[in-house]
Image (cartoon, rainbow, N blue to C red; front, side):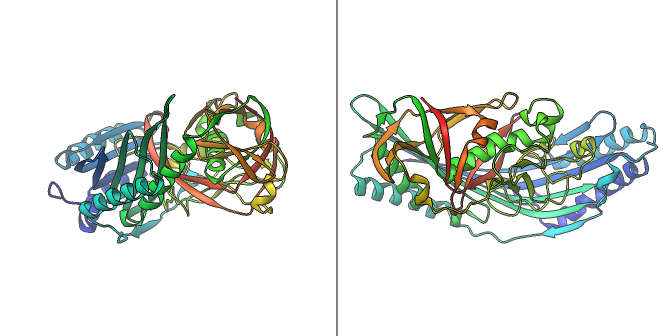
Length: 459
């Protein structure tokens, strides 16, 4: 592969052939081994206060991993070092004793999978023009002249390959595109910032750039007139994005099996127990959304996981190692930020399954706080304590907005919040984002219906 080129199918197959002899030795020793390769390019476009900036970077990554008693891991970003890495790995594996029992024997799959998609893209010049025009049209329409703004768009596209000693050979293309806004406006007292994001796994042409910019300006309109919220306990309705955050932060992270194994998850005490009403199901799904994934970064076929089913904590999210530890089947939740990183247990697209109520029914009553979007927060997975801050909030009275609220903080405990869910609406919307864990950042989706929760502390 020449520098600057995206690895094509022939390059991938050549690399797989080179790595196969190493994998064969690992099979003979009954030791798990995988080799992973990635080649592609990333494009970053930014408009900051009318100034445009573009960066294009080509990259290559190759790694080798063994899992005997202690993980052995090598990686390189140079195609010239592949042969040396393979030789070093072979020398290492020849020194290892043959294991009496096959390591990770329960997950032997012997799958071969090839998928190369064509993605829908437009040129950087067209994207810059779309961002520029949409921004000025929204500013003119709302009559808001921001103090400053940043519009950012990033696209990663390439190909990847995985071969492992359990017989998996994965060859596939890859694409992710992500757009974000940061628009700042001033009041007499302080500044307000509107942030919105959207993502696409099918090409940058499919990004909802105009919609996200318009929503950002509408958020600013409400933020500029918003009032502080009176502290107390309220019945709360959270929108689709906020319900996704609840699913991801309070349920998904707590269900990552490596955290449960290490004792760093509150779910360690609740296996098989009821956490909430029978109408509540939370799913981590690799088939939809921004976390869509056919095979994870260990080459495992991904499957949907019902973490909570009908109110009961039913399943955890597994890598090969955690699946062996808990004597469960792997779920395809091992992911790596890039192939210079070791895969760890991560979510894909996590959401609450919709309920039976119309959205309007959730707002029946007085003094209901409506949370829209998410601007920040944190969760302690060991104790279950969480603090969330929405983008916007509204005081509602019988379904009507009374006033906009700002600087609203929602706090509570995972178990108590799940047990306080009163109603789930029929609607369903997913959002796109990135999740950080152990210094690795991967694309994920989350979402669900509007949800009504009683007796939550607002500050």
